[in-house]
Image (cartoon, rainbow, N blue to C red; front, top):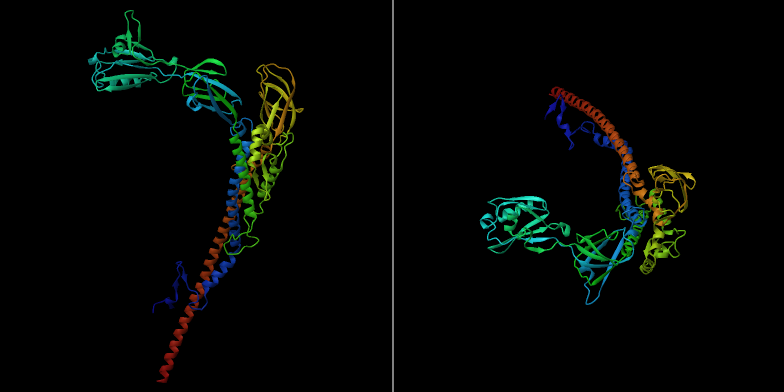
Length: 578
């Protein structure tokens, strides 16, 4: 038996945590169990805090999902609200279609003659177009050479300098046809050189202008003897030099548009004849008239309506799920309080209320039959989600696209063409406003202005009303007072609701992200408090363990002493008996 200072060392054990356990060895008391129980009791405040951390973490996660769904509503509204200058305005999207008719014979399909694309700036109307000729890039060739690798001078070419597109190219006595091709291509002369070999002893240098049109035709200069012996030019007895082997003449595109004939461009990509329309010419057919019709893109508008309805319903479904009791702790039962973490959240309630307001709002002054969602086929169902009646929606779109814009978008009109409406404010209401320009200075900047009789903030020619509405005045220099300007503003349901949902979903500063940040800050504080509690409990544990260890050590010594005395007593008794 091993002993240390009279203490039986086999009485000590080391636990799996590496700590020395002496509990109950001498006293019979399970000190470890007592300490663990004390620590568990003292740690209950930390357990309660950890429960709060878990609840907040669930809310943070749910808010992330909620933001994604609300953001889809924001995006859908942004397309429908028609903010001035917005690139997402679905009512500015255009569709273009075309038909063809021939004076005689069969006209080619539109798609084989040209491709037309439109931007938001294109006007809704029809245009007639004729493609009389396509633009062509100038192309010429040299005479034939027997080899591409032997020197050109050995094949009858005179070395020297020539110019192409204003760039000088030097041909030495040792240069081959391959060398000449490389020098031309490296000269940045607006010409591309290739070699075409009809057979092993007939190799041609082919030069093609990199841009089409008459203005980009090739010209050759420099040593005539060089260009003549290459076969690019020929000089007659009067010393007049011309291109010897033309393959394709430089040519401009020639089109007629809306009865205006002879419109020419150097390229087949024409984007400066009709505002907002780009024509890509593919084939000329002078006897065929193409009719292009530009109109609002009804398909894009309907898609935007579908996106709005889907986003609206997704938010509704999310809230319903949060408020519906289900077996969320997977214990096989459903308690009334087993709802989602956002079931009673104020932000969620506010959002739901705004959705209801959006769906039920009627727009004052809108065209009859286009004043509410229900009138255009977006109907409220019994479960408060929205549904689309395609037959009604399609009919309404085909009848009056502007009616949809009145229902959803921000609509403005100004009585004076010198005034441009730039933006509404967050609190701008529908109505008619009176704008008065007090005058302009010598640079055309506005010296002062009023909006419904209230002074505006002036920055050059940009004027801002107290409610945030902005207009731009471009009336000219040194004007006196300009009065009698009226600005009409009508806000549709998408424009009325956009600011709320955008404010909800802005990154970092939005309502949802702000709430998430608050929970994160609270959880960090809770985590620090738990760490503090655990640190203090660890100190307490060590003190208790030290006390129990000291007690067990003392009792073990007493027991050892008792055993020694008993042994001595037994020895005396045995001696006296003998």
